[in-house]
Length: 328
Image (cartoon, rainbow, N blue to C red; front, side, top):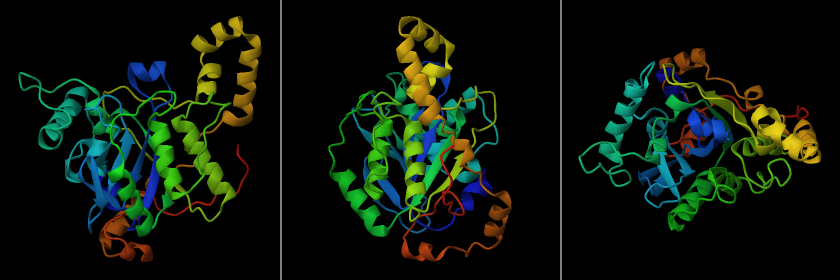
């Protein structure tokens, strides 16, 4: 895991993260979570952004619900994935107790303003746990495009000036809507709301599908895709993310009652799913190349020409993929 993260190429990118659902809520709402990793954008605090300095690895930014009344927060890449500051401290496997301890230790050092101690000094309950240690709970897919320093600077200015007070709405302004807005900032019209397949709700999986579809139509969009595996251990495994029509059609607990109540509606949803909804992120994403990681560690000065133009910035994936085939 450490080798993989230290082997990133020196460049600036924005990577849309499609994160699988997990736990009881994930069973009820199988759409998962959405975030954006920005390799050349860092943060003085979780609510104030800046461009990265050399050697920094960027932040993951997303819209959250019920975290100190804030709309978005930015967390450095390694803590966001593993709840530690240093890659050397990432465990090779973890259980619930280990993950809770790592999250609480990071919170006490960095997040007291956003998740203060309980009255007895204990770790508080709440949704703040979504900020750190995502890779313990679920598998993540990334869809990454190249950015420029000018774009990154404009994004920093836009978000720093935004009214960062909660705007979350499950149906109108959810985490996928925020991530789509960030990706559209870099590549206008890349993601649009789907009023048929997802009944007008922006879902994390549809955003990923939109990005791939846009890259196929616009070859200049040098898209690459990767995945980050869930840390091994005793925690339950996450499950693939679904869109709304997909969840209804594929789940017996939803589709059977719906078919009894409205066969026409059920047939329509099934038809839309077959025609438009069978997107599989694993068909595009590749894991990190361990052999490449070893080579990069052996030659730490190696970087792409673009890397010299950015202060920090190191994308997570390797070679760019150009999508030219038809949608499966």
